[in-house]
Each structure stands twice: as structure tokens, then as C-alpha cells.
Length: 512
Image 1 (spheres, rainbow, N blue to C red):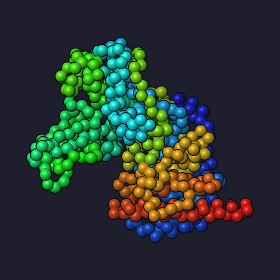
Image 2 (cartoon, rainbow, N blue to C red):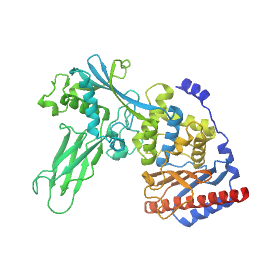
Image 3 (tube, rainbow, N blue to C red):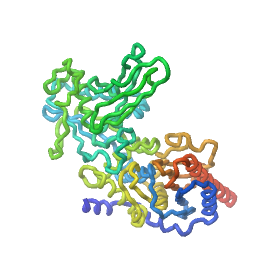
Image 4 (tube, rainbow, N blue to C red):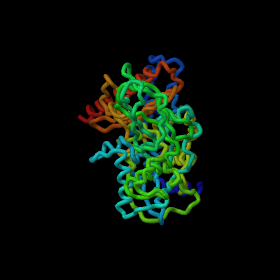
């Protein structure tokens, strides 16, 4: 891998190694104003690091504890998505394919995190449901004249099979933000269950799943219909299993899905697809189409590919594509961890030519940081995953702000990258900046894990286009001060916004 990365370094252009060197020239009055804003917040033992840089001049405007290694939480996604954009290019498209290899049906994964994502499916020009995607894939096989396959094989080798990072919180593996990261993903590697009351009080509630499959094991021994009160429902699964347990009381039909992560999501998808093939008239293994046993788990006819097997060959029956920019936009706007970690591993795969891993993804991010903003940027940085879920990640706000500045100026990817960050009222910034109306356009990526609050992005003057890149990362934030930490972020942005407005006003007067 070292040889491949050395070759890659020779081909990277647009290196901006001077960005970090500007730290000593920050605008002193603005720096002082931010320091006063922080001191007024009185957030206990919180440590606040701030860096802001003027893209027009390269001048560091604010530098407060800017060289300290900070845990970034989801601001890590800015390093990941920027790296993915530079490595893959704005025109990159994920391609998940159904291939007939002899009498075996192979699903060739591309590491696409968006395959079957209900959020993106709903935003299509012609919206699709999750199960319609499965119907399309199975129907394409039937329409190709295939009446029987010996087995369904999942080729997930674009990534390795370390599906979760060792530093992720193991007690949260069931949560949707801890979804496993596979070379073949579907519906964000989660199962959705909708529950409605049974016929009378005390009766077993009814349920449906998305994706639909009657063989999915849902234990309802500890959930009952009630006629008084309200819904109190929990959904769990035992470790390393796809057996789901519902508990509680059901008064009314759930309007939103109850969601939980899947174990071995690639294999689960293969089983769901095999089930759908049977319904579409395609026999799988020893099971004829229309067999009443089709609603059982068809796992005997589904397997993961042997990692040492030669590359899959054969006729492409169906293909599902997703543009990279759609993935990066959803990642940054909605802070989707699965999306970020797929991009992280895919960057490693693209550079090394081998299955993407946590380690190779981390190496490529470090490489791109060094290329863009200088080797000193990675001296105090620890890159562990792509999403920021791991508490082991560290980065300075100087590195983060300088990285954002260089990305925005990149002739290949700059405008596209800036546009992937949400504005107030959108995504994770939906409830931010209420009652505060900065004159400039605010774009930012928020971040949160226990003890960490972060916000990094851009301020852009609406008339002149004059832009600031900023990074605000707070660590050791006491739990009771989470809201106040967000207020401090926004107060700092207000100070930066006022400075930007004054600069543009001064330029206008001089020009007049």
C-alpha cells in the first residue's frame, strides 16, 4: 500500500501547505472579541477551541487553543467527505450489480450506503418504496428469462468484513447510528417495524416489516394490545443475531417506523432477495418458485462469497447507481454515520486497490490532509473512523479550518463540497440559529457525542462572496450545558458575521 500511496502523492495537485503558517497573523481585535464571548458563556470545565481563516487573504482571523488535539465528533465527516471527493471525483457513481455467473446469481456490492435508503428513495422524481427496489431487482432476473438459480452469493469484497470499529460503543450497536458497514448495504442496514393493535385488549399486536419478509423472526411474547394509555414499545435484538424482540403496550398504530440495526447486513439482504426471487417466479436452490415454504428463511441458498475467489464474471442482469454527490450531501446534511464510514473505506479501496479497511481509510485521510495543508496538520491528528463515532479521533481546529479553506478553493471540488453542507433550517441545522439572522450565508456541520459539541463550516457574504472558513470544537462539555454550548457556537458565528459585514461595508465605501 505504501508504494501505491507514494504514486498517488505525485499525482495530487492543488496543495495548500501555507494555510497553517498563517496562524500568527490573526486579526487581534476579532480574536479578543471571540475570547470575551467564550468567557461570558461560563460552561464549567468545557474546553473551547476556535479557528477561523479568511479565504481571500489566507489570514487567520481567530486562533484560540487552535493547536490542541480535540475530539471532533461528527465534524470528522468533513475530513472524510472532502477526502472522498478529492480521491473519487465529483463524477463518481456507485454501481451495485446483479450478475449471473453460470447458475449462480451474484450481488456485486460497491459499498453504496444509499442503496434502498428510504429517505433518498422518497426524494426521487418518481418516489420509490424500499420493497419496490427489491421487486425491481427480482423482476429483472425473471424478465431476463432466468427461471432457476442454484444460489444467491453476496460479493462484498470492495470492503473488508470488520463491520464495526473496535472503538465504537458496544452497548449501542442496535442504534441506527451504529449500523454495520458492509460492502453491500441496503436500507441503511436497518430493519423497520410498524406495529398496530390487535383485535382486543390483551391480544397480540400485529406488525409489518420493511423490507417485507415473512420469515423474519419477531418475538412478540412480551407485547400486548391495550385500550387505555399510550404506546410504550421497545425493540431489541440479541448480539450477533437477526432475531428481534418487541416489548411493551400498543394503543394505536405506529405512524413512524421503529428501527434497529441488522447483523451481517449483506447476508440479510441476500436472504431477502432470495425470498423475493421465489415470489417473482425464479426458483432458488431446491426451492421451486411458489413453494409455500418461501416465507421461511432461505439462508441455505444464500452465502457470502469466498474472499479468495476470483473476480465475479458473467452477465449483468440489473444495476442500481447512486451519484457520489448524493451520498456526500446526505452524509453532511443529515450526519449519516454509515455514509461517512462507507466513503472512508472506499477511499482506502480506491487508493490501494484492495478491500477498503478502517486502516487504509485512515491512511488516505491523513495523506490528503498532509497534501492539502501540510504534514504538520497530521502531527497531532488521530484518524480512526470516517463518521466521528469513535472517541479516539482527534484533530485541531487549525487543521480543520485550514482543510475547509483549501477544499473550498479547490478548482475541481470546491463549490460542490461547500454546497453539501447544510444551512440553518436544514438537516442537523434544522433547529439552529432560530432568532438569529446572520447577514452572511451560514453553512456548517454540527457534531455531538457525550462531552463534545462541534460546528465547522463556512460564512459567505451574500453579495460579494467573501468567505470565512471556521471550526469550533468544544470538549469536556458537562451534560447539563449541551444547549448552552450550541448557543456559544451561534454567538461566535454572530461575531464572525459582524466582522465579515464590516469588511464588506468598508470595501464598498472604498470602492465608491
